[in-house]
Image 1 (cartoon, rainbow, N blue to C red):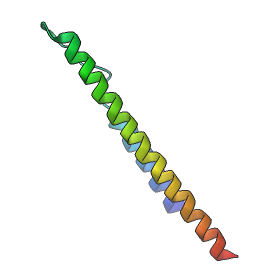
Image 2 (tube, rainbow, N blue to C red; image 1 turned 135 degrees about the horizontal axis):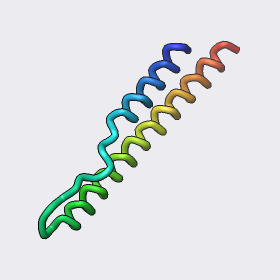
Image 3 (cartoon, rainbow, N blue to C red; image 1 turned 90 degrees about the horizontal axis):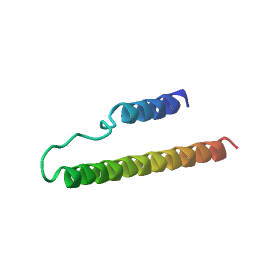
Amino acid sequence: MKRVVTVILVLLLSSALTTPAPAQIFMGPNSQKQAETAAKKEKKTELKNAKKKQKAMRKYEKREQKAERRKR
């Protein structure tokens, strides 16, 4: 049980450390468009990571419930 909790904490911390910088500063005629695309891409990756975390948490909870049923 302690191992599972530590694995989850490591996953959460590693994903928090790997989040990209807020936004790059672009220069030139297409700078606004480049900034918007970069922001959109960043948001998409954040949503994808959040979805993976939620899936991992559901999987963990399901395993815990299974273990609980086996103990009975």
